[in-house]
Length: 296
Image (tube, rainbow, N blue to C red; front, side, top):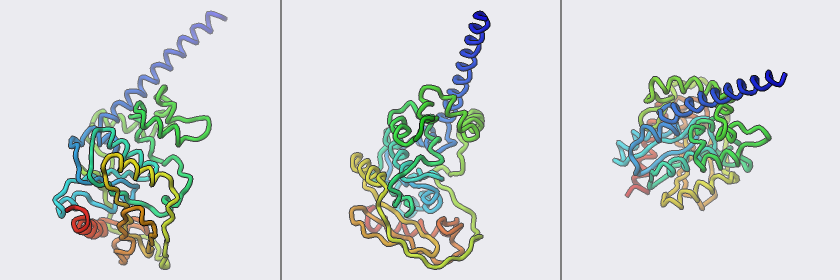
């Protein structure tokens, strides 16, 4: 019996080490690819100095075209927005940007008013995309502060990568195989980090709304403090929304309000996201405002 237990323990330990070795390689291939935005920044973006970067959720990803803005302003920008994220994730993305030795004069933060009002932010759906960088202290600190409960797969992946890769297997294991074969393939964004929704308006009309911004989310100040510490000017941007006008009374933040810029439903993919045609107009207006008030 004792011999059987000893062999079982040895066999289990070997399997455990092999599984973690495979998981480590999964994260290694993603880290050294362009598939997800954090890895894209380290693997494909060689420039270290930018005039501006854009951070945000899918709103920033689909409302602002950095290539178009560059063509109008003759500046150099990059869209680092990630879909299905929140202000806490935007803070992590900006931390990741600075920790890669990169700099920017301006940071354009595309907000969503409900997230800005959230006083108790939680881990976002796509925060696992930073898992290949879990050995970095700023990622460890973020996961440790945001994960709740006893089981913390992201934090534990620092020691046992198989935990995170197994927990997020569809989003990490299979993309790692693709990253191994095609390391320069990007997951729904172009060479400057942009993505556009198709031109359709398949959603219901709604009554006109008015929203007064509530600045409760603690990560908005963390983002501003991080910008200040790196000599970056933060610009908070409200993208166009369908039938919703936003009002802001907080003068502590530089704010560009395009909430009511576009009124035609044909410019929207849904009530909070622009389509390709809407993005073209919004990006042009944003570029002109940046040129007039910031890019001197």
